[in-house]
Image (cartoon, rainbow, N blue to C red; front, top):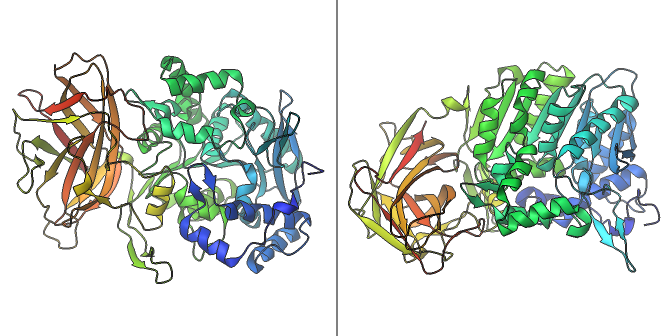
Length: 615
């Protein structure tokens, strides 16, 4: 590239209708560390067209029309914004051609090798809604190529410096970007919109900008407490952190400074975890809610039930502590699945997660009289209440009727009652243990710890949940669950209420599991999974959560209580609840001693039970 601020046109392919259809149908990720190349190509093709740099037509007719509409009402730019310490941030501006004050939407990009360019389609749509737009790539993020003979070459959308992981340097950069916006746009109001990494930065800038200039925040697929995302219940979330390290766009020695590399190395090795937790707390929006609440920043947050990067409970807790105008959307799927396609490509119908985010902006910074003031603060999409049909062309399910969404006035109103299921010696219909309303003590179930089984949270980070969002949740064959390496309890078949259209159980909220455990070793890890078991022996996952126990006295009981991740799930009549407890999942670290035995029991005074939230 002769000019590092211009796209390399040789890497841009023509965008086809087939590309757009595939992205819309399957999502933007092909793995936890890879985007569909066609999704990134859409952003690059849009930018090349806006710059007049595309040598041939590279857009479909509707996308070409979109660029022409924006060019009639706005001018585009690709500045480098210089941070306080001299780091140059790659940015993209869309400035409306008007003398009237208009709001600006500032968009820090997600944690992606393609930085700000990935969501170019969304920026163009925002401009047509009447916003100036200023997108930027946070420091250190973006494609970086080692050069022959030494050194590195950055892509046009890559920012300089090293990744601060939403730390103080990123907060200061956000304020610098606001300075630039005020100088070049003279905006009437300022909004931050972010997805994933950009969502956390957006919240943190709103809390820390010295002049309190952020008027609203939209935080999609966001986090509340980064420390909990890294390390919860004495268990490290290894796979998520490894995926993020491998998705920066360049080698680790270029992307992270020595201090951050040490934090990551300590985390992966399970060392100096107090320092790791303190580092995560500093980067947690939940740590600064006093500032956010004092500033009254209206905050829109979203997350997914089966989130593998920023598990849902921490986001719910963040939301509950906010005292500002607020909205919580909870969706089927995993990280970025609900909004990713809607920010990237045109769809055949509205992408509701994105449309509601834009409506929030319209109301809070654009002064549009819309339905936002009448929204319920909480809206939960219920697993898996969509109706699907098989696409004859692909043989895969497609959603023909969307999943039910339930509005509630607060998170506390999501759960209206709880139900306790005691773990018992045997189920009435199998050799597994039972789940019953009546307590039964004196039994025990043992398994050999340290082996992976077919009972897993996901097949893969992001993409398993992406398929859920598209109407194809993972099916588990429970007959293949290896009872030598896990323990299983199932309920009797559930019956519906008096209304034949109601579910047998409406799980709404945070389940809790209490177990009395002993191990033949001094430490062990437990991974609990709650499944919806169908009459044919297949199952779908409702929720899960690990817990690691250390400093055990071998063969002495330890009573442990921990919360599983929140769920909104309807269990149909005739289905059963299945609780599975194993010792190992590829998502997490473990403290197992291979070959050791874990025993779960239910003695007098310390029964083992599952508490289900209902609503």
